Length: 453
Image 1 (cartoon, rainbow, N blue to C red):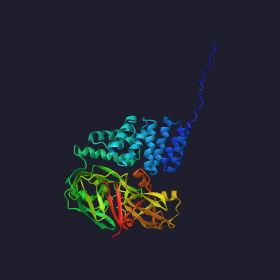
Image 2: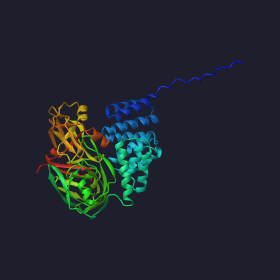
Image 3: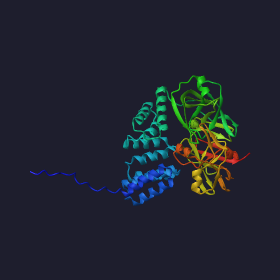
Image 4: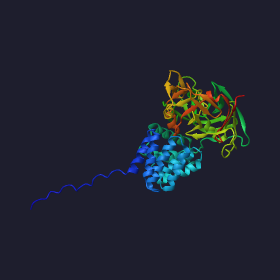
């Protein structure tokens, strides 16, 4: 009998990629590479080719929402994510994207609900786990979410993963105590005087029973930093290493500590996480304005800070001379224009100089001259050097004023945009804010301006 050789079974030819899914995938890749215009264009192409009210259309619309969010269009992003969920309620990426939008309103309860839905649909989505862990009230659940995050394959930058480890160490150390526990009077507003040094506001703060010292009151910071000398005096335990990123994009690892108490005026926060800034001498201490959010902080003309434990944020903003502020990634964002084109500026009371983003000016085709050796922005991780200056006369209009932007420093602010999660087109510092009188009402999310007295 002759043996019959049996060959491999015939293979079917490779299937061409689904055009809608391919466009959606490429849109996400362009958005992740900070090419928001490309991401938007591809997402819209995918939507045009997708069957109406289909899962493919829902995925394409979620990709559109992500591109809009990263480009700074929060309203458009929210609408896109909601329409995506209208086409498919079981789309985890749309729930996660909607949660990011709700965090900027801020609607923390709504964001928490959206993240719960996202987690139920995608239990191993690392970003969802990390964001939800920062919102839940239960220490045990927060630890469980963070630990699950660390068990998964690395899905984010090493510095993000290391900072999750730092939070785990802190939560394990604090035990049953509540972070940021607030004590103080329950009625009425209380005024705290501010000093103005180098144009930026400073406030007296007492830490751990030590004599009060000045902290930079910084709307551009999302936490608290203290000098290493203070940590030594209080004999605080270094719980972990925390990675901080400055406006220049430079990073530095610093000890993560737990302050026993931090007092501003008649109010005291107990068990406050902080970063101990390394360096020679007595490094400056920084108090992020967002820490005071439970007290509805309002800065008046950089001379007085009003705190009210029972203060509530009114719905909307008055029509007259108030501008809306957006809390995005721990900073306050205010809308402005450059020669009539919209800009999104970070309101930074800790910045002595204003600056514009190189990416924003490229988008608007504004001519930039080479920068000089001057230092534009000095942060806790180093200084962001000028990469250019606005070459021609260009009108920058912002709440309370309009200036000629010619000669204004131009920086690479991509690190700031990434840390905020959404595009930031510039920094509005106290050099321009000093042209008038200002009230920053953090609790109500608004800014009021007036003529200089």
